[in-house]
Length: 383
Image 1 (cartoon, rainbow, N blue to C red):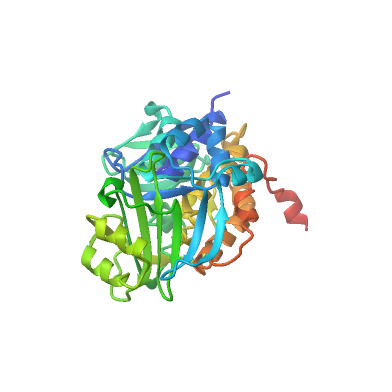
Image 2: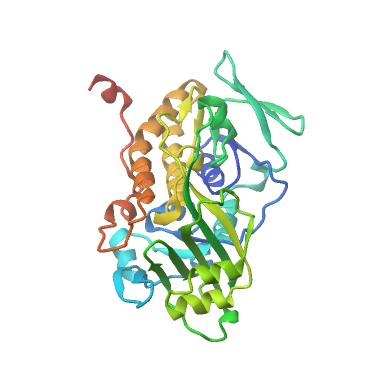
């Protein structure tokens, strides 16, 4: 029997994760990415135990352990005194409890690891989707800006927060600008001139915070990201640059460790923090959304990429052994299995209270996308 063909739109974290999962589930996968090459964006990422369980299933754990930092904890402190609000212990304790490590890495290294799990011949760069149509025979035709066209059995749209596919299926969703901005950067730890910092700390101020952590096992690179009020900036971009002087001034009242890191920082990016409500639907026929395309979230729980990676594992389970005629049912099952969890994370992250005080994080980190029960649509229909 001919394999079901699936087009994955977007080769970010979610798209590559989807391709890794679906190709291993026996589907004929092609990834279409509008960029002409992959770039190592200067940002850190927290790879939670829940995400690591999925990545382990694709054989990526050894690579990520080599490339990422293994913190003792995620420590939450008062912005000025350094008094501890809540110290979430990771390291071997969390690894034993949740069944996988908690790692801090560079987004580029996680992206490279996911790319290594997808055969390069499955990835088509320079393909910007400009249109699609669901055909009478349930297949889907795709049109790209470079003039190419193709017809596939099913489409997985992992095209991010500004998803073209989402807008075409369900209309544009107006983003909620939070009136807050974030600064972020990765820079060499050598610029600290031997000054020692904590493994991973979130410094909680009255109306702003900063998270600082290492992203390399040898502590050679440092990352930080902030959140602070600024109602006048509304650029939702990963590439816009910020003013380091303004950033330092904004955190002038913070602990000496924070000020030392900001003094050493050579340059920063700046973007507006935007929130969106959970979508009522993710799929239509043989087309589904995945990751940020259907559940974008604020960064306060460090779970955005993890949710997309979990999505990919569950989707691969739903589609395994399914032909074109069963794709729509599999997509509805995927949505029904995932929506409650992703909505809970999305809405919990919105409050920016995660780990601010004593917190039970088990519901986040103990989840195993390989073992979580898949929704029974027939049972749900009759209930």
